[in-house]
Length: 144
Image (cartoon, rainbow, N blue to C red):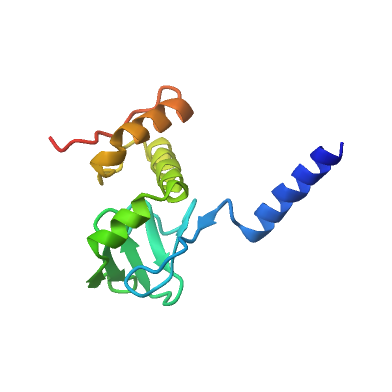
């Protein structure tokens, strides 16, 4: 019974802190702190999903290319380094949110996300989608 109560407390704490709905990598990208949200309201720009800048709320980042934009006018203002993107994509918690959001988008809009998961994670992504989306349409990982 104590284990159940502790588990319920843990769930409530996670809900209250929104840790199930967002994730902050423990490092900076382009000298800024970034966050990825589950069920983000502005999901379509600049990528599905994308990251929001915590230190400057005017900025958004395409998680596939690293391009950074101002959200009000969609002007490209910078780019994360390849090293930063590799570090970001090496984080399983980040990838899990990406996979979940891609799956959610596919289900809601009945179409595939056009951006490709990095080749190194393509097999993992397809396995994740197969496991959690019975009969879901898989995204193609290779450009045609």
